[in-house]
Image (cartoon, rainbow, N blue to C red; front, top):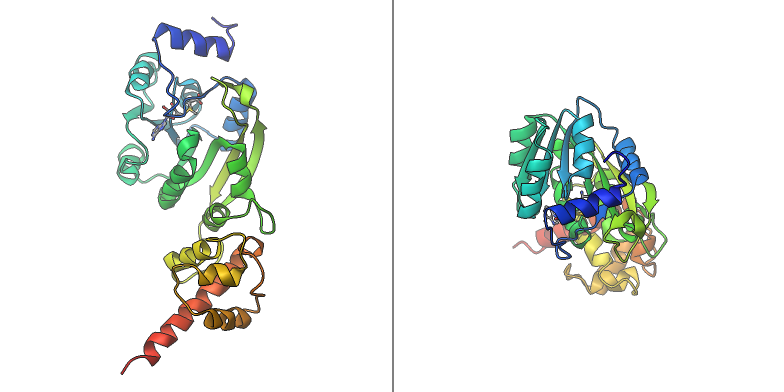
Length: 296
Ligand code: SAM
């Protein structure tokens, strides 16, 4: 048993429990020791740590987390896999298993129940079909999370960590960088998984910021402006904002951008987070002024 590779172990578990691998749930199991080591090293798990794992699958990463952390809460959507995990990891008294969809789960409540008021570290080899929604959902729970060490599609990791100026910089980069500091830890080739996916992956670590990167008065409005600016990537900033749900006149938007000293012919992907914040502040001010001047 000792000399069994992770691939052999994965194949034999699948056979033993007659598992039907679900494409729908993004089941690509990690079979690469080096990638597992990289995840653990990047996550810096120690015996004081509370860990939330999403999608434990066959439990290879889960077992390592349990060996190293104080307590692990693992959320798995697939009932059959949860039943198997309950058998295979029954020795671990520091593991809690939930058979739930992470996107439907009351994460705040469950974290409180399992970890009391302690902040946790998230570690996961994420299912690719819902990577961005999961990351955004976890960011909403940032009060209870220190860091997230995640295996994601390589292209998504690059988009998250991208700086302004390139094609990869977009809403996901702005949203994640506003709340966290991303760091790509390592690239992981497709053959590190069973079954082999069609894309390569990367391990990314997001360290949650105590305070957002820039100070913004109305976060929801800031993200509305960011969405508006990126709504038509091929167009100039002026035309994208004009075509967005902000519903402002073109010449007003032009004045606002002049006030911000930002060239209206630039494209959204060239703007820094500070410039987005400035534009959003100026648009908000403009809308406020408009509404007070319309008062009887
Ligand atoms: N952690 C395992 C590993 O590294 O080999 C499995 C990773 S596999 C890429 C993704 C896992 O997430 C699968 O076990 C899948 O069933 C589970 N999953 C998919 N969608 C989920 C959801 N919405 N909520 C919770 N788990 C989910």
